[in-house]
Image (cartoon, rainbow, N blue to C red; front, side, top):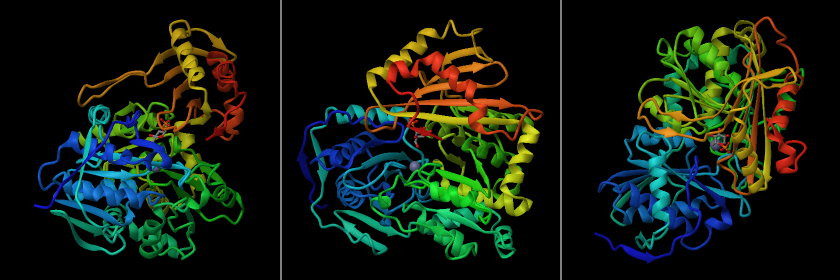
Amino acid sequence: MSEIVTVSTRPFEGQAPGTSGLRKKVKVFQQPNYAENFIQSVFDVVSPDPGAVLVIGGDGRFHNRTVIQEAIRMAAANGYGKVLVGRGGILSTPAASHVIRKYKASGGLVLSASHNPGGPEEDFGIKYNIANGGPAPESVTGAIHARTQVIDRWLTVPGEDIDLETPGEYRVGGMTVSVIDPVADYADLMETLFDFDAIRSAVKGGFTMRFDAMSAVTGPYAHEILENRLGFARDTVVNGTPLEDFGGHHPDPNLIHAEQLYLAMMAPDAPDLGAASDGDGDRNLIIGRGRFITPSDSLAMLAANIECAPGYKGRLAGIARSMPTSAAADRVAEALGVPCFETPTGWKFFGNLLDAGKVTICGEESAGTGSDHVREKDGLWAVLLWLNILAVRKISVDELAREHWARFGRNYYARHDYEGVDKAGADALMDGLKAQLASLPGQSFGPLTVSVADSFSYTDPVDGSVSANQGIRVLFEGGSRVVFRLSGTGTHGATLRVYLENYTGPDGNLGAETGDMLAPQIAAAEAIAGIERHTGRTKPDVIT
Ligand code: G1P
Ligand code: ZN
C-alpha cells in the first residue's frame, strides 16, 4: 500500500452542482482546496468499491491539466483501481459517456464549462457522471452539495504528474492510470450506428461540408471521422485544433458565435452541409445551403428519418424533448405511433427514459440532440445522422425541411436571453408570473388567447421522482406558446430565457421570416411578464 496524505480543509460557499455540474470562473477554481473539496465530496458520496474504474477527461480548456493531475492522485488515495484518461486530458463529453459505458467504469469526472468561454479569466467546470454514462441525478448532486458544506479533509497520494501526452499505462500510488486515445472508441461506435458507405459514396459524388470545431474538443474527432474515415476533403474541418481559450471565442454553436459558418452557408457557393459543435462536443448546429435548421426542428426531422440509419432501423421506441423545446417532435411521434415525453431542461432527465428503453432519440432547443448510444447529448452524432439521412435520401437540407413542414406543419421558434440581469428582478418576474397563473386562461393578447398557464412539474415515469418549478408555460389556442425560465448554468447574475413558439399548420404560411411570425408571441411575453419593468431591458442580449 502506498502512503495516503490527508489534507485539512474548510468548506467553500456555493459548491452546489447545477444541471451541468459545478461551474465557476477559473479564478475561483484556482483557490487552494477548491477543486479538491469538490472532487473529494464526489468520492465521499459515491464511495467507490475498492478497485473501481474512473474515467477522467475534459474539453481541453485552461486549467484542465492541473485539475486532472490532482484528480488522478486523489482517485488513487480514495481506493480506485484504475483511471482511464484521454490523451492530453481530452475527452469530449459524449466520448467520456461512451468510455464509461464501454469499459464498465463506476463513473467519470468530466471537466468542462461546455460552451462558456475558456482561459484564465473565464470559466471552468467539473461534472460527475454515473455508471450509465450520464450526469449524476439530483439525489447524487444534492448529496455532493451537502458533503461540500461539511468537508474537512481531502485525500491524495504523493507523486509527480504523469505524462498525459503519451498513451500507455502508469502507476500512481496503488492505482493504474491508462492514457487512452480519446477518439478511437468513439469513432468506432459511430461506424456501428451509421451508413458510412452511403456517406462515402455521397462524398465521392461531390457532396461537400464544412465543420467548425470552434477551436474546441471536437476537432480531433471531426478530423478522424469526417476526413479520414468518410473521405471529406482535408479542409472540411475548420478551427480543428483544441485551444485552451478556444481562440478567445465562445465555443457555442449558434448563429451569433458561429456567424462565420452561417455567412458561409448563406452564400450561393456554400457546401451542402454546415455544422459546428461546442466546447465539450455535446451540442450541434446544422445549416444547409441557405437553410438554418432550428435545434427543435432538427430533433423532429432526425426522428422522422431515423430509419435511414442502420443502427436505428426498426427500433424507435419513443422521442423525448425538454419542455422549452418546440412541439415539432410531438407531431412526428404522433405520426409514427410512438410516445413523446416532455422533460425538464437538462440532459439528465433523459437518462432514465433511455435506460428504461422508453425513448431512442431525444433533444433540447439549446442545440442538444442525442440517442441511446450514450447518456449525453452528442454533437458529432447529430451531424453524422444528418449526413446519413441526406446521403441515403439524396436530397438537400432545404428540401428535407420543406417536405417536413408540408407534412407536419412548422413550429416557428426563437429563444430570447436576457443575460446578467439583477437576480432580485428576475426572481420578482418569475414570482409575478406564478401569481397570475390562475387568471391567465381565457385572456387575450392581440391575436393570442391563453388556453393553459402553469408552472411545469415533471414526474419521472421510471422512478416516480418529482421535479417541480421547472419554468412557466403559457399555452395559447392553436399550439403557440411562450415559456419563461431562469438559467441554471449562468456564472454571474441571473439569465432569463424566454422561449417563443408559433405553430403554423401544413396549409399555413410555411416560408415566412421567423421574426415576423413571432411578433405576437413577443408582445404577449412582455405584456404577461413585464420584462422591461423587472429587468430594465428593452431587448434580449442573445436571440437564438
Ligand atoms: C442550458 C440549456 C439547457 C442545457 C444546459 C446544459 O441550461 O438551456 O438546455 O441542458 O444549458 O448544456 P440553462 O442555462 O438554460 O439552465
Ligand atoms: Zn456542451
